[in-house]
Image (cartoon, rainbow, N blue to C red):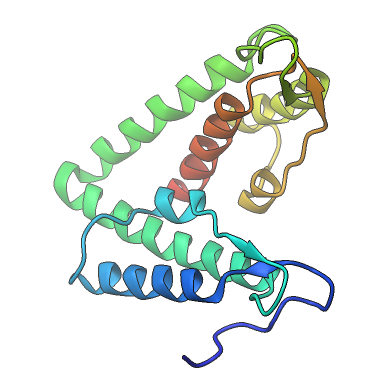
Length: 181
């Protein structure tokens, strides 16, 4: 197998090379139309196992996945537009954006479900601050890039916001931003 990416820096865990290669091979087949079942969302949510030795540099792989995700999103947009027309496509995106806005505009500390008291979740103050930025984005008052959403980090705290629910809204936000590029 030829090396697609540089190795992880010494002393740092890297992505399992076989997993990365298998996924990229499958994505290539899907993009070429000989395999089904991979979407831009699947690419965005892909998590690879890490290995302490001889893994790919996670940053390099993530950058490639982001470009691949954008290519799939563009293709998905073309397909939906072909089926429903430009107006239908944008109607669907506006509905999705409105659902996100309705969620992120909720009152502070009430935007998402809470993790159980003794389970970690995202720190509500951090999430609420970022949600304020998303409100401004969806109201056309602030630019927010895909990279900003993808790279957003939150502190954790016991009883914080349920991470999976917050992550889903961030994923949906990336989908909307990619859709309207």
